[in-house]
Every structure is written in structure tokens, then in C-alpha cells.
Length: 272
Image 1 (cartoon, helix red, strand yellow):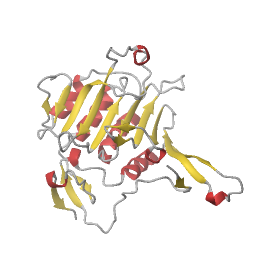
Image 2 (cartoon, one colour):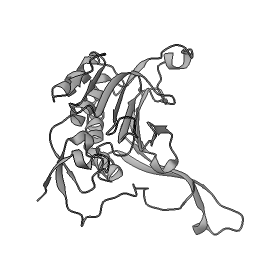
Image 3 (cartoon, one colour):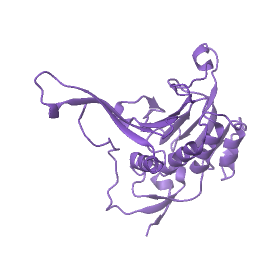
Image 4 (cartoon, helix red, strand yellow):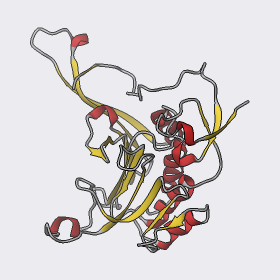
């Protein structure tokens, strides 16, 4: 897929119209991203002092004017001041899919002294921007972004504290919201998820690799998910817990654009 060259960062085309009425809505995990997932995250990272770079790859045919050059792929890369963590806006870059949804943001971190990512986390559109921001704030606050400090129980404690229910079959590895719409699970990591754990490279086809946290919202059973998130096996559990606590928060969020699949499930009150 080709797109015209644009000097501005590629934004989500569903950016809301400021003239639309705004509402305080809940629950947060069904509220979508308000069509502002790029802006919400990019503004936060800029406030934290992260550097942004726009990477554009394209082609130019012989005798073609520069303004007619076609962009093949593009991404916006945000890098922390210590260069140990970064976030990529990859939605315009024909990303791979997660739960039949394209990846919008990929967040990674590395150890000091190695150029390779130790872990990566992937977020599709309609993940609430507030949730991704809270994950990134926790990541930015860490001195060592790859060091494992806690166990997986912290993640489940974060959501059960807000009323989520532990999975009946796997109480130590999964939870769901009271309406059984959104889920959090520690288990098999989908293919193409990048992680530096050597076991991800040596596992046989009939063997299970290292477990990672996965989260998704499925408003209609068996239908397309509203959003999906995948954390590779080496993402520290306390960072996933920051994501989980924000996702399950009962605090309302401000929205102008409501997802079609969850519009009737949202409680709303006019803002202002």
C-alpha cells in the first residue's frame, strides 16, 4: 500500500472532530482510544523529553518530480534520553496483526551495552490512550528498564483490586472484567513477538515457549476484538501491572468518539 509523502507525522485518520460533544465514559477498558492514540502517546513522550524521529522509506521513478515521490513505509520513533527505551508508531507502516488488528505502537527496551531489544510490547488501535501512557510513565521512571523485580502475582493483584475476577481454570495466570469482555492472561506468546530470551529461539514446534502477558477486549464472543495487547516474555511484571491497573481503573475517561462495538455498554455523562 502506498501513501503520498507527508512531512507531518502520520496520525490516526480517525482523529475526532472538536465540534463533537465530549463525554465522561466508563468502563475504561471498553472506551477505545478516541481516535487520538498517536497524539496522546506522542505528547506524553515529548513531555518526558523523549526525542522523536520520522523515518520515511519510499521510491522515486525515473523522471519523477520530488513532490511526486511515493512513500512505501514510514514510522515515527520516540527514544528516551538514555536511549535504553523507545516507542514506535508503526500503524502507517503495514505492521503485522495481533488478534486480526494491526499494531499501532511497539514499545521496546534494551540493556545498557547491547543494541538489541530485550523485550517488546505491542498495542493495537483502540487501546485506551490513558492505559498506554501509564505503561510508558512506569517504563520511563525505571532506572533499569529490563530488570525483573517482581513476580506475575502483582499483575493479577492490580486488576482484582478493581473488581476483576480471576480465571476459574487458571486463577494464577488470568483474570477478566465482571462482564467477561476484557481479558488478561499469562500464557503462550503469539508468533513474531520479539524477545531476547534465548528460549524463544530454541523452542521446538511441539513445545511451549516462555510465557508472556496478553490482553484483549472481545465485545462479542467469537467476533473481532476491540483491541489487543501482547507483552513479550521478558517484559517486567511490574510494568505489566502498571498497564493492568490503568486498564481496570474505575475512573472515567473523556471521549468524543465511542467504539461502535461497545457504545451501548458504556456509561456516559456530558463533559463540561
